[in-house]
Each structure stands twice: as structure tokens, then as C-alpha cells.
Amino acid sequence: MYVKINPENPQDRLLHKVVDCLREGGVIIYPTDTVYGLGCDIYHKKAVERLCRIKGLDPRKAYLTFVCDSLKSASQYTSHISTPLYKLMKRCLPGPYTFILPAGKQVPRHFQSRKKTVGIRVIDHPIVKELINWLGNPIASISLPPNEEQQEYNTDAELIYETYKKQVDMVVDGGPGGLQPSTVIDCSNGIEALQLIRQGAGSLEALHAYL
Image (cartoon, rainbow, N blue to C red; front, side, top):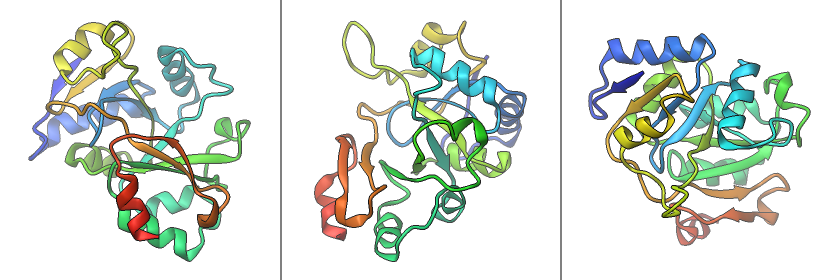
């Protein structure tokens, strides 16, 4: 299914359709503040496994990001975060960063066989905020792979739909996507040992300015 939602004023009727799809274990493609992503409800194990297969990943080894609507709700899925690290995240989020943190007890069991960390994203996008708010929990997410021929991310939701319509349950068109994924920072060993995992849309200079 292809659904076009106004990114500035998301239509409630269409948002409900997407949330119903997620609650039923569907896999969607949806807009973020960076590139388009694959997503599903974190509590649907089979949907998580299917999402990984679409990306060509081993579900037992894949690391998915929890997309949250606020840093406060994200903190429910992590273990203790030091005050300096929390302040850093508060300054950077919502925004184009993914922070890898020690996983908390609220992380569903089917994620707990993996490394005891969780990627946290708070996305600056009206559609995503509404979806998560109505769903009531984070979306398990991973970036769409770049175009195999051009090695660039597809920014056009209609073209994305033509490529993935047989693999996913819904493509949400929220306008043009970005060309760079989020910047991934491993914070699992504390703010004193931050490690860059992937350089993306988030500026490292801006991050260092907050330290």
C-alpha cells in the first residue's frame, strides 16, 4: 500500500492506517529527518525478522535502532545514562544522530540475545513523532540500502514504492528524503570514550561543541 501524508500537517485518518499496520505486525517504509527507513513495531518478533531479511541481515546479529518520540521515552529502553551524556543527547536530539547505549530491561526479549546495547534515535519529523505517539512505543528501524547501481539513497517515495512494494506492507510518502543517513556514535562505554561508527548527516563539529 502507498500512503501519501502531508509532512507539515499529517492527516489523522492516514496516520491511523499506518499505526494499524504496525500493530498488526506489518513492515513499513517511512520518512525520517535523514533517509527513508524500514520500520516495524519493536514488540513484533516476526516483523523484526522480516525487516532484517529485506535488508539482507541475519536477524540474530543485526542491530536495529529504536526510534522514539522523545529522549524521555528513549531513556526507558536504556540502562543508566550519566548526567553529562544525557545533557549531550538532550542538546543533539531530536536530530540526525543515533546513539548506541547500554540496553535497559524494557528492551523486548527477542533483542536481548544480541549485544547488550541499543541504538536510540529521536527523529525531527512530524509524521514520525505522530506515529510513535499513537503507537505508544518506539519503531524498530534501519535505513533503506542505497541504490545498487548509483550507491546513493533514493529520495523519491514513489520510486521506493515501485522497488519495495512486494516486500513491505506500506510505503509512507512524506516528501523527498535525504541523501545521508544519521551519524552513529557509540556511547556504551561512557562519554569519555565516544566512538564514531558512521559519519552521516549529523555534524561531528556540532557534537564536539557540546562536550
